[in-house]
Image (cartoon, one colour):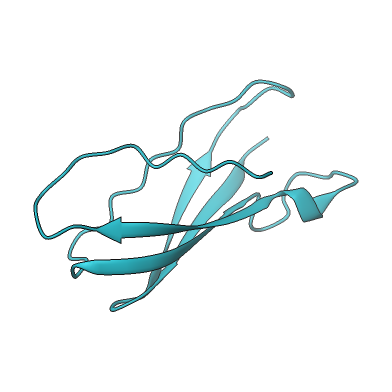
Length: 86
């Protein structure tokens, strides 16, 4: 099934990006990348929602969201953003 992953960011600038994931079998994982150009230096609150449109039927929709903090430094850096829901 196809589903949508949404990234929302709020800080000195705000926005929302969407990515589609196509054909993922139950159980495995997949990397989803977002390119967020033009961010101003500073801290941002980020929220990632998997299956944002509730396209995949499941019993628990409440575990499809994670929030975190992302910092845009004054220097250019390429770092992976890893979020864990504890």
